[in-house]
Length: 133
View 1 (cartoon, helix red, strand yellow):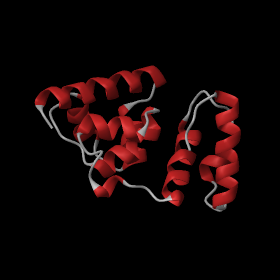
View 2 (cartoon, rainbow, N blue to C red; view 1 turned 135 degrees about the vertical axis):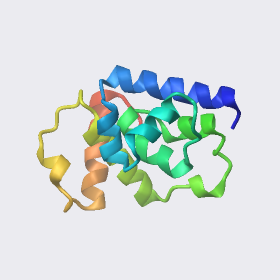
View 3 (tube, helix red, strand yellow; view 1 turned 180 degrees about the vertical axis):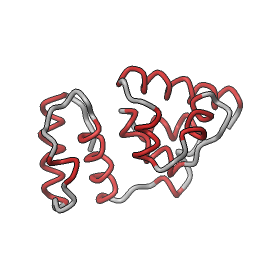
């Protein structure tokens, strides 16, 4: 990853976070990465791992593919996601979208089946016009 692409990725992440009105602390809590590290990524000073990009994509409202492409990971085998991983990622996108009102029970529910999550994602896609799966 070149310094220019790191800066480009960082600028995109900052813009997306500002647009969604998400605090860096929220990204920190949902991704498990430190706030200072995330700040350095947004400033283009650090190269994030593919795994971190997968974790933060839903919080930023970005596509994993877009972030991985900007970071230069798209062709690496580790970025392939199973069907279950894609559903889990898309479900995180749904519950982290501040403009989509779904109630508070989804944030705390860990008992939902994969099919229930898929259904919620499909309803979200129809309501918002966004394509996640």
